[in-house]
Amino acid sequence: LPLDQQWMWFVDSDVIVRPDALRLCLHLSQKRGYGALTLLTALTTVHLWEKLFMPLAAAGWGAMFTISLTNNDQDPATAYANGQFFLIRRDIYQQIGGHEMVKSSVVEDCDLMALIKGAGHRGRFLLGPHVARTRMYATIPAMLRGIVSGLLTMLPAYPAFIYALWTASPLWLAASITHLLAMTACAGVMIRWSGNPAALALGLPVTAVGLV
Image (cartoon, rainbow, N blue to C red; front, side, top):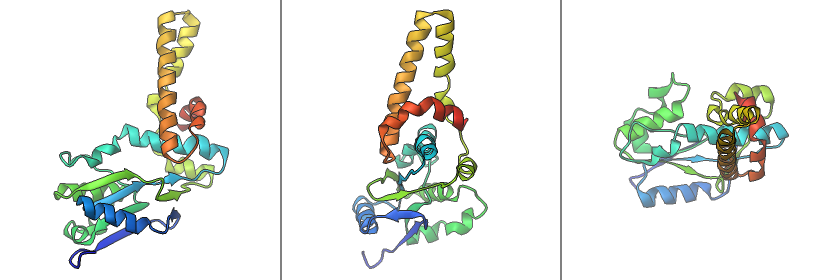
């Protein structure tokens, strides 16, 4: 590291990282001039209910809140982060006041990123399934407490499909089937990004209804 540059690495105790994770992230951050780097880790899923709900819930959160816009340096208002894996330059952390400034927030990781971007520094939210993985919830009650948003965007396709069958409307049937296929394909891609089999997207109806 440069003599005048130190970093702070925040990582949850339940996150499993590859041995060279810190070296890789430091190298990338320094090479590209990032002030902060946070990763979306792979999801370890053991039970069927985890496989059906967790990958899609995480991906749905990322899609609905457009977390990728965190990487737009021209949009300081959009700032998200994953506190499970958060790397911040020490001088920037001190400049923004650190966790003291967000101690009353329930999403302190996102608020920290907002402060970092608001101060004119470059923050990045990247996919990191090859760097770290996490099993977020081991029980159903814990999962229900942890999930704060439902996948409402998934639901319109199913009433539309039922309505199409009820009315025998070719137009509604075509539209609902197209929607179903598109949402399932997108869900498959997002689930694959989380480090889980894309075929789990076939359980999308159960997942979407269950989350809501």
